[in-house]
Image (cartoon, rainbow, N blue to C red; front, side, top):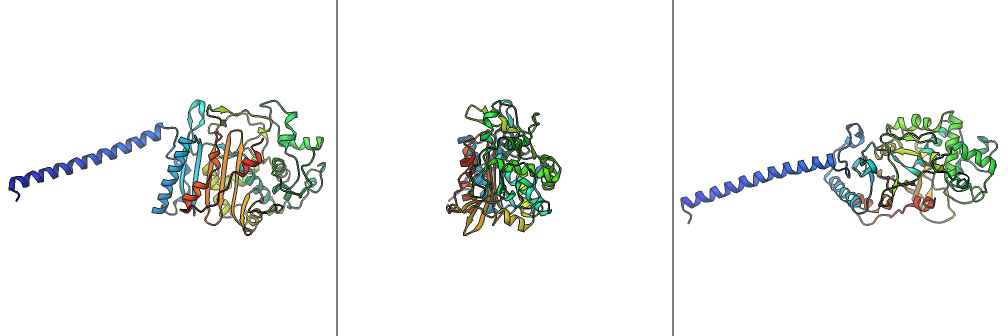
Amino acid sequence: MFTKRSTNYFALFFYSLFYAVNLLLRFSTILVVAVFLFSCNNNPEVVAKPPPHHSIKRNKINALTEEEKLKKYRLDTLFKSRAINREFNGSVLVAQNGKILYKACFGYSVYEDKTPIKFSTQFQIASTSKPFTATAIMLLKEKGLLNYTDDVKKYFPDFPYSGISIKLLLNHRSGLGNYIYFMENDFPDEGKFISNEMVLNYILKKKPTLYSKPDKKFEYNNTNYVLLALIVEKISGKPFPKFMKEEIFDKCGMKNTWVKTSSDTIFKSNQTIGYFKKEWERYKLNFADGVYGDKNIFSTAVDLYRFENAINDYMLLKKETLAEAYKGYSTEKPGSRNYGFGWRVYQINGDTKFAYHNGWWHGYNSTFFRRLSDHAVIIILANKYNRSAYQIYDVLQVLDNSQNVIDLEQDEQKDVEKK
């Protein structure tokens, strides 16, 4: 039996307990908010909130579902772990079914100044530039200004090789040598850049030996896309950077994307520097750093997603044109991996499931992965060389809630890391 006095004690006890818990919860909320704000403002390793003008309309169609929120949490855990344990330094964006599930920035754009990476920070996307160059060619094809069967001699009459068409440049079956190798001995000085025209003139004068006969086999080769950029200029009458800005970047709303040339010597405010090793060594520039078409587009993860949306919405190219781009044109070796027009493709029974392109150049890594069925997009840009920038297996596991996903290794790494 409880007395009236003991009942009052119990009531006082529970009231005090309730008050203490309530006060603790309020204090915890204030503490969490304070820590969050402090980390956003003072921790350069993670930029948690993008500038307002970088919002993407497509992400506003619907709020994230509970399942998507869980994916976002798992992705955040994954990339924060990479940043801490593997020293990943860069920007990430992951989307699926028209929604951005996750985007984040880690580390520094300029290490010496401890300048934090933001969503407007621009990375050299290296060979991930090739889909853009191919898009420019396909735009001219749709306008009836060229044919894929056109011989390179049509545009450069003194070109020393016959039987090399625009199509063979696009799908890397030209047989041409790689300018990075056949020109390096003649341009040993660091910081003295060559141009696309100098590559062409070198070919016209020196006639470097072909790797193979045209259309004999697939041979990934940067010279192909250097020539394609020159063909864009020849047909359009515009410098390649100007054509890309007016016909692609501006139309996609890519405000932080541009093409670097041999004459660009002024460092832009939002530009990154390429590093490698734990000691943050700067990669030394060499003669090839002024050549475009094969590389030298600077962009952001957000802008690449805008390009993805424009492609999917057929804002730039027709559906039938993209179908040609996603075909695999090399069948010498059986397998699922192939190359289309500017895109690496992964095919199952001849049906293209993924279109993607990686990049590597002087400290920069880039991954631009696109799954066509559900518009799953994985964009990873890094300016401190790190192999994890290519590793999307764990990301696909999150997107599919499954262990049964295809592991795509870094094809670009295999082709060009020997540079």
